[in-house]
Length: 101
Image 1 (cartoon, rainbow, N blue to C red):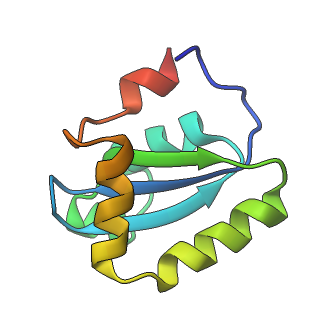
Image 2: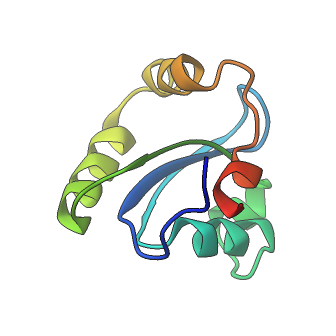
């Protein structure tokens, strides 16, 4: 995958490890946001629980659509989130190298 556009509404899932702790987020700049998670730039959930592995993301046309999808995914049960990840990333590979070029 080529390097991502700087501004692109995106919903993403991070994991601490395969089948580990999950985090659902939304951003307009995925590369910057994942860099912040990996560098533990701010205190919070991902820093506290070591959730730094990008395992899934989807891009949206508008930020409103991305936020709507994020809210939907946050309401999903864990099994549905695991299935979503495994459908596109069965090896739970960290997708960071793919997005940062």
